[in-house]
Image 1 (cartoon, each protein chain N blue to C red):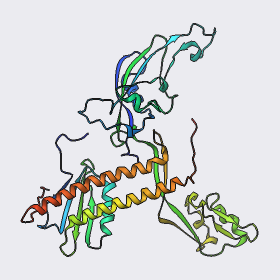
Image 2 (image 1 turned 30 degrees about the horizontal axis):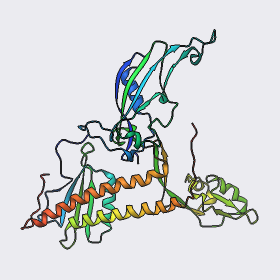
Image 3 (image 1 turned 180 degrees about the horizontal axis):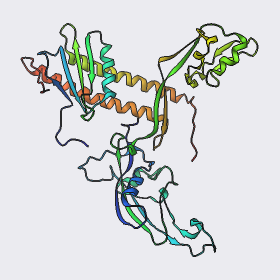
Image 4 (image 1 turned 120 degrees about the vertical axis):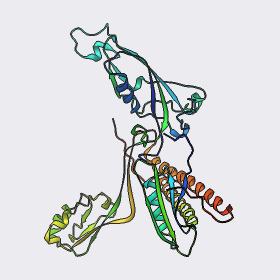
Length: 280
Length: 112
């Protein structure tokens, strides 16, 4: 999910004019990191030698000039009142459709997912005029293509109570775990593990520090129960990222399998059963 | 980016004369495939030994070593493992989609 699920990001920036205080390469880098709302399945991967087409490239333009606001209130020190266009925001990226793109992206015109990212600050007389080319890529090439902010997994914690906990220690026992993990029966003061909330336990092992709870509990993990934590940062809704990651994995397997079957074909067709081996 | 000359996805490295024990060099793969494939191969009772390594972090290849019992072909075992791994992926995907369709999950959106 982090490194191989593809997304769209700005890869090339053509600067026609930029006399702002932020230099071209810094601004280009900032532009590259802007998450775009384009569904990656609608585009193809652009190879290094491929010419840009409407299938593999999305073009944006930026043309912004900062001016003095003639209607600014007297004595104001607020740049938002003093100047027009004093900030270059991600909402200033204007998509220029090419070829069939107008129909393909009709439902959702390509734009940054967040329109309020400040990319540069301007003062009167400063101007930025650029052309941006967004392409499809994967996170192992550059982190800007990564579809997630974070993606991690952990195993489901398992808490086994092996000896009944004395009722006077029930509260103390409960406090050894994350909130909601241990239930205390209000009548019998019997402690039990909450089936649904066990997953919230941090497995801090606090309970093992107290001598009174010695041999009372066993902390472990369910070895085949995975909890994924995915924070999407792109066009994908988070629930779609796991299937996408699985698809990438299956594509890889298919490629290797094809190569392995071709290799088997080659070996069996050689009459003497010799295997073509590479020098190692 | 991609190399100019096309390279073989799988190469058999010099080892024993038949394929009962062989090392396969898989191009453009890493621990993602290596570990899963080794795990799947080890599930096969006909496999005597299986291991993988990334020879050097800056070379984008993995080496998978497979040794078989009874002079069986390690290439067949590799292909079976790949097929089985694909089936595992498929069933995980199906189970996930089926569970997602039940629509019993929490949705949480961060306001900016």
